[in-house]
Length: 394
Image 1 (tube, helix red, strand yellow):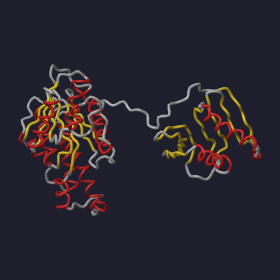
Image 2 (cartoon, one colour; image 1 turned 180 degrees about the horizontal axis):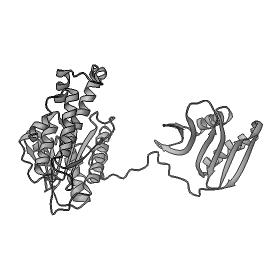
Image 3 (cartoon, one colour; image 1 turned 135 degrees about the horizontal axis):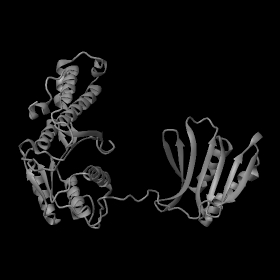
Image 4 (cartoon, one colour; image 1 turned 90 degrees about the vertical axis):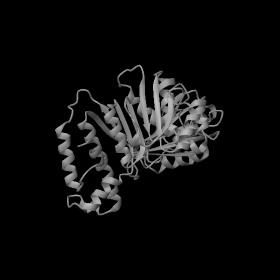
C-alpha cells in the first residue's frame, strides 16, 4: 500500500477542517468481516458548542452514529481504511473531491476531482423540526408547565411536547378531508390535564383558522376547574371543559370524537358516543383491555393459538388485538372506514395504538359480513360478548 496516498488523504481532511471547507466523508466498497455493514458517512457537527466528526455506520437494517473529536476521528479513519475492509474513501470539500482507493495487489491510487459541493452544510447536530405547535407565545403551555415564560421547553417535558406535536400531526392528516362546516364541534373524552385538548384547539383556530367548539370531558373536578381557568387566561373562547363520565355525556352534534387512553370499557363508551352522534371522525387510543381478557381466560378455548395464550404476556397482547379488532369491525358495521396504527413510539408511552374510524357515506350500513367476522372471532377465542356490542344493541 502506498502510505503516501493515505497520508495525503488524511492530511487533506485536517486542512479542510482548518479552512472550514469540509462537506462530508464517505467510506465504501466494504470487504471486511463486520456483518451487514455497508458504508460509513462522516460529517462535521456541533455538539454542546464543540466541533465533532459524526460517523454514521450504515448497516443493512440499521444505522449507528458515533461522534469523535478530530483527533479521535483521524485514528478511526486510519484503522478503517488500513485494516477494516473499506476499499474506497472519498473526501468531499468545497474546493475539490479527493478519492483514496485500493486497487489490485493492495496498490492504492489518489484521485483529485472537481468539487461536487460548493457549500458547507449546517453544523446543527439535530435538524430544526417544523412544529405544528410552536412553543413560543403559547400561554397555555406555560401554565401547563411545559415551557417557561420565554417559551423554552423544560428538559423534563421534552417528551410531552414531542407527544403533543405528534398528536396534532396525526390529527391534522385525519381531519383534512372532513366535510367543511361553519362550526366544527370536537369532543375530547377523558381530557385529563388537557395537554392535547389545548393543542388541538390552538391548531384548529390559530393555525387552520377554523371556527371550532371544543369540549374536554373529564371526571376529576379539580382538573376541569384548572383547564377552564387556563382556557380563560389564554382567551380560548371556544374551548370548555366539563365534569362527567364518558358514558353519561351527551355527544349529540359532535363532528369529531376523541378518547386517548380511556381505560378498558371507557374506550367502548367513547366509540359508542361517536357512532350514535354520527361523528365524521372517531379517534381512540385504547388503554387496558381487561373485559375481553377476562372472557378469554374464563373460557380457555382450545384453538391453534392456545400454546401461546398459556403465557400471560402473550395473552395480554392477544386480548389487546382481539379487543381492538372487534371494535374496528363494529365501527365498520355502522358505516365507518377504520384504520389501526401506531400512535407514537413506546419510548413515550406503552399505550401506543390508535384506532380511527372515518364516516363513509358510501359504505353499506349494517354490513352483515362484519357481524359474521365478529361472531367467528368470538367463537374462536371463547368470548361471550364484547362490551361494545351490548352498547350498540348488537
